[in-house]
Length: 141
Image (spheres, rainbow, N blue to C red):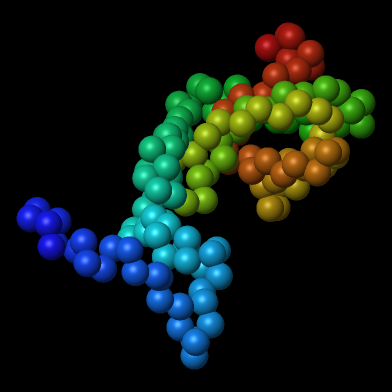
């Protein structure tokens, strides 16, 4: 034995291969050294927490009156199928707040009972979440 190298006597022996047990495939052998994610889902939770939402703007009395007049004008002239742009608040499904969306198109129907505006492209807009309505109909307002 050489001083400082205690395994000199066995280093050159052949590698042992079991005659009773099958060898592990290379792919399985590599898998045992793959990184371990101890906190599964933690990255997704951090990403969700970083995602920003906006708070819903509460309209004052004057803005609500103007919005109601625009809605009434739209209902009165619905058969003309004017092009309309709605800006409305869409609540977030996972946390407080939400985002403001803008939809442009023609209105299919206004459901006063359910308080929905249904666009021709199928988008449903809750009346209580509308921030603004824009159209050439309102040039006189």
